[in-house]
Image (cartoon, rainbow, N blue to C red):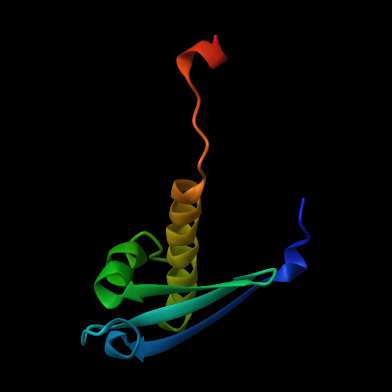
Length: 92
C-alpha cells in the first residue's frame, strides 16, 4: 500500500470562470497523489447540499466538506477510468 505522505491537498476559493469558463463561484481543490495532480471543482450549490450532512461543523470548517466532496468526485472518476471487466464465464 502506498504511503499516505504522498497525498496532499490544497483548496482555494475561486471563480469557476477562471477554471471552467462560467461565472459560478466555487472551490477548486488540488489533490496531489504521487506525481499526479488533480484539480477538482466544487460549486457552492454542491457544497451546500453536502454541508447539510455535517451539521456539527462550524462555518470555518466547511472547507473540510469541500475536500471530502472533492475526494468522492475523484474516487468516482478513478473508478470509471479503470478499464477492467469481468465476463460471466470467468467468474463461474
